[in-house]
Image 1 (cartoon, rainbow, N blue to C red):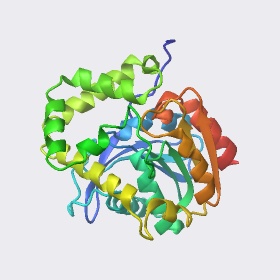
Image 2: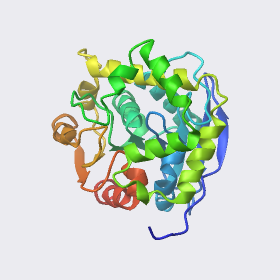
Image 3: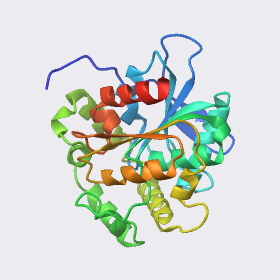
Length: 298
């Protein structure tokens, strides 16, 4: 892998809101007056997942990456709601704190599910919607996600997560990289070390396991929802320009779900990257930006 200069993690601050405190990283734009963009990570991720894409977009957006409640450096929400809708309320609070919308909204995996809630329920706040491997309902089971329904089972999940935490931090981080990247060698040593540092910083958080399990279970419930607020039904209400990017080598989200996007989202473009995994914004930020430039910025 050719070594190139990488941006360090963007400065982090704690934003005190009426009903929660959120840890937020801000990528200072290259010029004033650019529209705000909010970046939402996936399950088990953090605001660090967006460092490179935010760097690439500094001349187009004023970027803020949020740690969802209970993840990264954010404490859990006071109301305990870690469903996609609960996390969406947190992001809406942040948007209001930053001056209101409309904003460009980005979401990966769980973050995509959260972004759908916002775009459907608060269209006034969303200028565009971009998602990488969004966690929308699908019943395709692959080798990478077969364990998730098992972890979601009350009692079982607690035991499995506790066992996982007995594994050294470095191995846990590498395991996540191996799962989420089509080619783990693309991860620069700097990014690996940053992930290890953050994982170690969270080891003393008593709520970390509960936040992961509650968010997973909240997300899985949306997969079983047959009511009017189910995710694919919400998608039909989203009229803003929408870009959805899948990785053909993603073991967690089946890229064949791409065909449903154009069926349910009224104004969507879909891109499938042939050599990408679950976190295209980390593995191929240049391709994600190129797609955004073509379908959203233009």
